[in-house]
Amino acid sequence: MPRPRLIARLDDAAAPVTVVSSPAGWGKSALLASWAAGRQDRAAWVAGGDRDGFWGRVVSAVTSTVGEPPFAGEVAAPTGPARLMEVLQRTSTMPVIVVDDCNDAADPGELVTLAETIRTSGTGTRLVVACRGVPNIPLHRWRLDGRLAEISGADLAFTVDETADLFAGHGLILPWPAVADVHARAEGWPGGLRLAAMALGHHPVPAEVFAGSAASEAVTDYLTAEVLCPLDPQARRALTEISVAERLTPDFVNAMTGRVDGAALLADLQRGGAFVTRCAGTEDTYRLHPMLSRTLYHELGRHDRERTVRAHHRAADWHAAHGPPADALRHLLAAGDWTSAIRVAHRHWAEIVVGSRCLDQLATAIPGPDGEAPRRLWFAMALERLDAGDVVGSRRFLGLARAEETAPAVGSAAEPLPFAALELTATRLEAALGRV
Image (cartoon, rainbow, N blue to C red; front, side, top):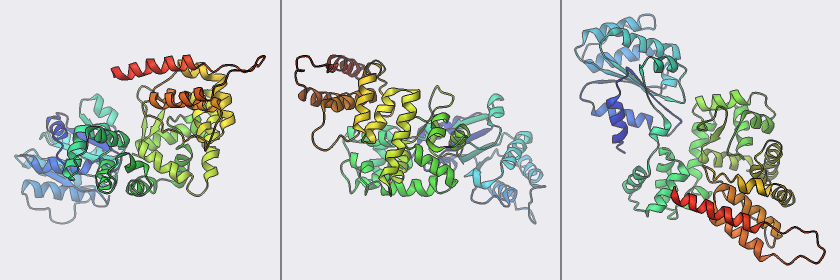
């Protein structure tokens, strides 16, 4: 699909090096191929997949692009930079050298040497590299020197308009709210949205695309093959254990997994393009992409439901000790521990009401108990929904709690539930959301 806003970013980049970095399936290669094909000057394409013979492939791509005959014999690493310099300084054009999938195409040191060779050639040649995650090259130094332009996963993410265009290209004309819903669930991930467009042909209700097990198989298969399988088994197990949470800190990861290197693990996963991102404005708080989180959560309880319950209890214990209490409540409800959830709601309802966060990523609604439930449980679930920013869900559970309310017996020590405080906060939150 055409990406004119990103093509313009590549065209307008004044820096000699451009790095396009994101996890798998964000359209890096497709974008660069489209841009290279449409350039008026020449672009030399160096494919990834094998680090052996990198300099030979670079020199071959450049000589072919500028119309020079290939060098006789093999161009090995020791002579590669000099051979490339010769070609660049002989040509009257200013080619662009594109290295696709740079993680597999070259060692980090070779990429640094390539960038330095291009810079010292004085020819105005640009280097554009695509990589999964953050490449192990001195981006900080190039950034400081004004030699670096960057396009990240956030830039590659589809807008709602682009999502609508993608669906239209698949013959799907959906109501705008439905398009926005699927876009939000994928957070603009192009690969996920393409899978959704194909799945929607069989599942016309967008909410079912990622919620239904059959409809989500393609997403699960892709993320498992491209993101999870390449990971170290211990890192994958840790990710699975922490998939119960929406916000991840090193201490939380250590408590959930028994590891002592939570900070390094999270940083490495982010740098490696494993759909783990640092939360804006924080130093050590991360989050999983929601589609990866759902895949991992399904894996967590696939063979043992109790494993999921134990993970939620560990998370609840940690949040009970470190806060916020709303997260402890959420995990207890998810674990089906109604008694403990009621206890947390009773003790901390004021903190939860005052501190309602309206989460950036709306937490999935937690199924209630089968059959009747005590009104204090409905109140606890109303509190959890309020913290998540789900005003409709909060009021629904509040109504159930009120329906179960009876006048306390004379002399009873039972405390009335603070319905008015919850309702007032819900009204204010609804008004705030309406202004967004």
